[in-house]
Length: 347
Image 1 (cartoon, rainbow, N blue to C red):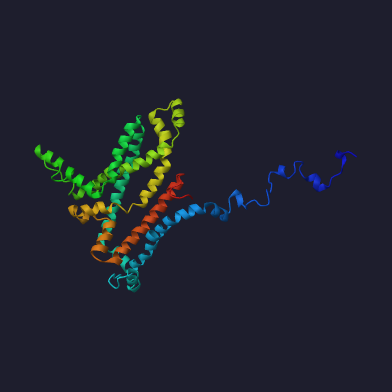
Image 2 (cartoon, helix red, strand yellow):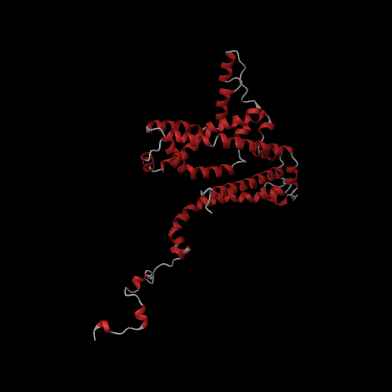
């Protein structure tokens, strides 16, 4: 009997002619590493693979834990009548200070100075969001349009240089330019006009702070946006030009979509920093315009905690600021997700 006429069992007849390899789901060698669903490595194997990298991150993780997370336990001061002079050890002082519950928060709600500081903080944030945030984007687009690399590098260095100046130096420069005895005031007086009152005018103080922030930190934002523009493929610009798109069309349909994820990320981070607006910058100019125009939440906490020694009250104000800032970050990140961007973290 020939081989083709040998009868086979039903199990053998149902098996594909190609054998196990042809079925597409070979089991592999018996010593193959176990895998989770969808081909992902198990947690144990990922640890074995990345253990060197994890060891390298331990020092940074320890620094974050010691200087960022352990101090959170100090928020218990907001619920105490904290007295730092009970002991030389701050932990012992916290453990022995009397608890007052929500009394400090009730005092904050009834304090007009706190609401004035909150109002100034929000006004300054919205001014910087509208007047300061778009400027690095516009400058990055302008520098990116420069053809000569040397000119582009010089412009980038000039814009970035003030970022290394301290706020003392920045305010001194503005004082020499716009102060009562500054250059512009002297020129106006020589021509029969009144001098400038920019540095001591409470009505324009918020615009002064915004201008100082733009001059000092706009170059830092330019660096970030230029790095995002460097990742855009030149083929996209060439394809758009071949389709008849002019410079404005290429900027609108190629450049800005490339910057959109970075803009969304920085905007979320900026919203999270909405209640943190230039503590050192404002503190240095506080006496020139008075606390009514210059008091923000950070200076309010400093004045009540450090100067007035009311630590529980200042800690309560700082805790309110932290909770509100966290809520703003989560809300802004949710808006970024609705816009189709990743934001600070994925869904």
